[in-house]
Image 1 (cartoon, rainbow, N blue to C red):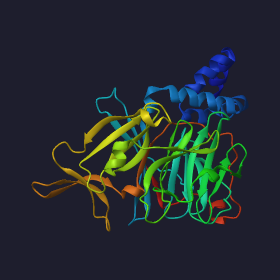
Image 2 (image 1 turned 120 degrees about the vertical axis):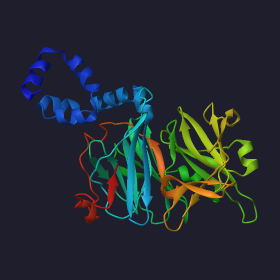
Image 3 (image 1 turned 30 degrees about the vertical axis):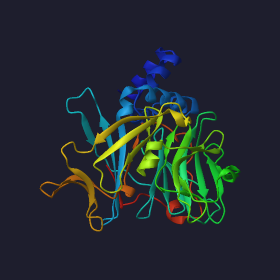
Image 4 (image 1 turned 180 degrees about the vertical axis):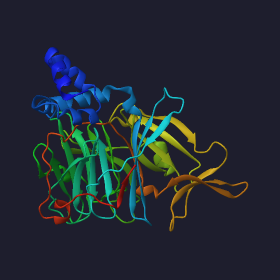
Length: 379
């Protein structure tokens, strides 16, 4: 449809109807339609429209079936990202869309801190980036003041309609800083005062964002001789405070490893034995932040045929494989990358960042001059 025809149609339709139509369109179309007129461009880039479009996108059942999966290849120093859409109404239930996208980072490796409402938080050395691949726009955050090892979390504060990043440094003393996208700056918080001196984070990969808080795997050791006890440590982006959540007693007594994730909006953990994983159990907290409401959802036999899922070729070409104890044969499952270097998260297309200027950290010339990196492949 030509631009003149689009303009004539919009002249005959009430503005409310035009808004309802535009809110239901995919992001790719809306980016093109910004060229229709100055009025449409102004409309599509307003915070109100971006929020309305996101609300509409999140309400679609199909968006709950979208995943972004990442893995790294140590040999080629390439990170692979893949969008997966599982359509239950399609007999060929899943498809993969492959596309090359300019990547806003320059070094070999990075961490995916988290993904919320189509916005990715990436960390590369001391540099943090908020990136929306759907609109190909990103901003670089100013660096934090701490130079020690830092744990990051990313989430959304629904009360203030603001995206936030939390930076947690535990040595030499606990320092907690929060970056607000609205404020455009880091600020210190007093949240670190509630953490015990022996608090340790068990996982430096992305943490799970659920119920307005980001959740980390943690443990606390008072003395060297005293046995540690793992727990879930949450940071609420609204109150900007830490909370301690106990794991199910069965998980603690069996000394199982666990990962945190969200299941239908509820805090959940998947538990398994180390390295050799014949089965896993999934626990769901029915009432958030109430330890007594942990309920075992199910136990999953990872193969169902007596085979064992193991990580193989750890030094050369890490991959998941199926091992048959009877025949002693190993079968490659086609899933590559180290477990700590791979992750998956929900994904929704959005216009978040469309109304934000492209910001760089002027102290980092490599990023300021970024035009794309050949070391990244986006699938």
